[in-house]
Image 1: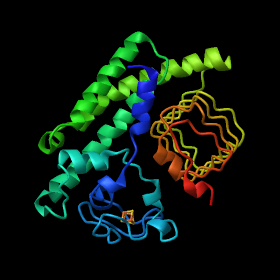
Image 2: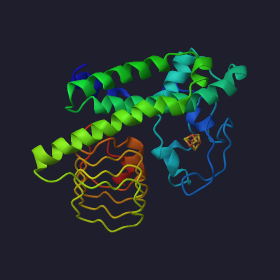
Image 3: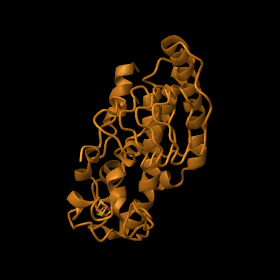
Image 4: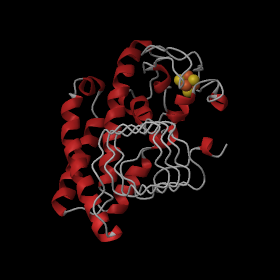
Length: 281
Ligand code: SF4
């Protein structure tokens, strides 16, 4: 697999709500918060979900207190479960399938998330041995998504995640080292995994190639910060201000993280991510 194919796979992982049976609006358990105005139990359709699986308040989600719905990104897991695993038969027309379909959705979501990360890893220049391992892992994950509902539900997700985590760590270390020495001519950024930088002022800082896995940057000020080559797996960026920040070569940054943050038309994103419409309002 060449880089272009990997880029294509990564870019193709986008939701198609027109081919999904509103699974994120029905399957998930969501507690009332600033992001979601009501409590909604797993398997209970949101009251705003219409018969045709469209959202009644789609145009006003943020104003009505459902900001979280504008952030969520299933990467295409919803249409896979709806159209492939359940052959296009909706839980409304076949209510006997609803419970199983709602349990399969979060499993598929996790598999798609891992596929997105591995596909991204394959877009980087890594050693041939690592590339082979990533390639095999991608094939394994893709084949899991084609299993039937019962086999999907029998998966041990912790065991599925373990080799993926190892490969992504290896990729991150390799790529950040190469970027630091060969592109930036500097020492590799610090290991700041899991650090608590909630609300911290990091405006204009040079954080290139820092490892920010699992870090808490909620409401941090990252305006005009240089975040190239930063590893963002699992970083909490809710309401972090990325206006003018450079994330052009940030690693493992997701659309959901970007959707949950603030930014502007001066924020430079990696090519596979879109500028959220609410940044422009
Ligand atoms: S508010 Fe709309 S998008 Fe959000 S869960 Fe309910 S139906 Fe879905």
